[in-house]
Image (cartoon, rainbow over all chains, first blue to last red; front, side, top):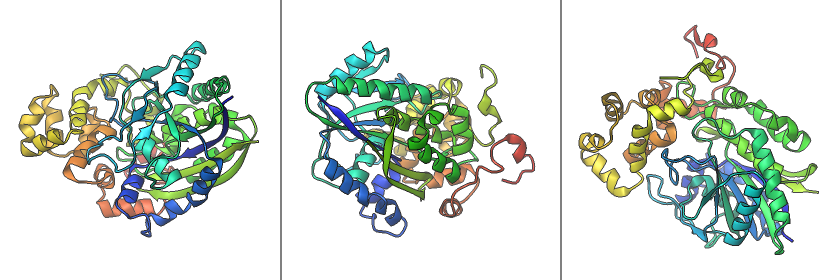
Length: 279
Length: 134
C-alpha cells in the first residue's frame, strides 16, 4: 500500500532559482534563504520518498488565459522545465509517476473533485524551485513527481476549505493504491507578497507566523480564512498560500512540526518553509 | 466594465485580477505570453509597434506597453505574471517593475524589502491612504 509520510510547505520565489542557477547561493543576500533548507535536504534524503505530489501554481507558462483550470493533475511521464522568458532553468527534466497519477485522477473524480487532466506540459519555477530548495542541484531528481497545478492567478482561486478537502481525497486515493510507495506532499507558494500596484511589497510576518503555527495547532482555523483576509493582510499574491492547505489536508489530524524556516526578503516575498510529519 | 462591488475594492493600490480584469486584459496578456518564445522576443525588440499590431488589444493598452507603464498595464487588465514577461524581455527584474509601480527606484524598493517589507498597517483600507502618505 502507498502511504503519505509527511508534508512540506515552501515558497517558490523565481529569484531563488535564478540565484542558485547563476551561482549566487553563497552571497550574503541569498545565504540566509538557503541556510534554512540545509536540514530539510538531509531530512528528505533520510525519508527518501518514491514520489512527491507537488502542489503549485503555473505562472502563465504552461497555461494562458485561454483555459484556466482550477485544479489540473499531470499524468505524463515527464515534464520539461519551461522557458519563462529568459530561457529554461538548467535543471533536470522532471519525471512523472504516471501510473499513480492516473489512479489519483480516477479516484479524485469519483470522489467529486473534477480535475482537469494534463498529458503534456512544461513546468515553471513554481514546481522546480521547491525541488531545488529541497534537493539542491542533482544530475537527476531523486524521486518521481505528480504535479498538481492550482489556479491562484485569476481570481477566485479555490477556497482554503476546498483545498483541504482535496488533500483528504488525495490521501484516500494514495492509501488505496496497492504498490508500496513512500509519498511526500509539497504545498508551495506564499507566503506574504504583493507583486503589483502601489501597495507592492506587503509583508505580514505576524500573520504568516500564526499561519505556520496553526498548520499543526489548528489547521481547521486556516480552512476558514476567506480570500479577502489573505489579500488584505498578506498581499494580493499572498492568497496562493491556500495551496499549503492541500498538503495539510493530506496529512493526519495530528502532525509533528520537525522544521521551520522564515526569512524576509526573498526578492518581493516572505519566504516560509515547514516540514510536518505524520505521527 | 465591472459586474459590481467586491469586498477587495476597498484595498488601496491593489488590482485583483478577477474575471472582469481577465476579460479586459485578455489580448494584452496573451501578447505578453507570446514572449515565452525566443523568436517572439526578438521580433518584439526589433519592431514593437508591428508586433503589438498583431494582437487585437486597445490602442491604450498598446501605448502602455510601449511606454513601459507598468501600473497602467495593470489598470488596463494586465496581470503581473504576464506583464513581467515584458520586463524579462527587457532584462529588467521583478523588483524594478514593483518599484516603478509604487513610485520608487529599484534601490529604494529593494531597501524597503530588506527592512522587512511594507507593513500592512496603514495599508489595509483606502481610507487610510487619503492623507496621501503611504
